[in-house]
Length: 310
Ligand SMILES: [Zn+2]
Picture (spheres, protein in one colour):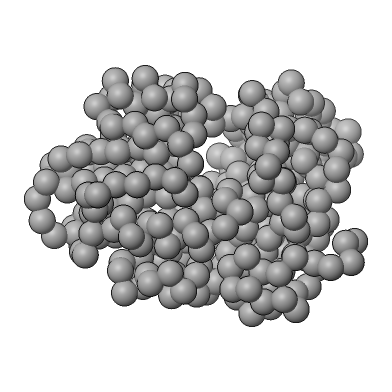
């Protein structure tokens, strides 16, 4: 274990504790042992010395979100689209005004923006910020404005009424910097919607030392609980207005598949990573059903949190 654990990137706490070791058992980019740390003050779990300067290395060319084009006829895709539309409709109900401007961060070809446009006919402009050059043409074809580059460097004179960060905040080395940037981009009555894993959950406890899927090791740099994310919002001038748990099936499935791989029940390789393995789909379907049933009563590994300017 490293002698000096890195201070908490969320609250700055220096007296932190070891959380777990983990390996990249999804894409096998290396056999490096990574160290995760937990902050007792804000409850964040984070990667000690995250490989932020080795993104090309830790995101291989077959990374699942690269070049992913949704198949609008597939059943899971149709279900997801319907659920997301319903969820976004509720969010838009709380945002006043016409000619709404929507920003999606890290959503590639703009699938979420298209769903947002379907969910509310007051949406006038849709913008995407992402690092993937290859996604630009698809996003533009769907009618979205595409800004290629890191979110930390994105500037706009206009404010946004809805900003979506779906499964992104956990990938950045300095979440406070990104949240502060989002606050600056938010209109007075705007909503920042964040989807991110939650570490205060049954599967995180079961798979803590067995490559819990929420770690997405080593690609998730900082992970939160609802309380910790609220504290980060407070620090960045954002007030939590709503939060709920939703299904975290991949977090379960990756943990289970790691165990199966270790016991030689299945074989994953860099060429056939977890997400392309045939057991991934049935496992996620099973755990999605389990999480949907328990989400109203118990925290799951995925949370949806809304913020407004405080
Ligand atoms: Zn902290």
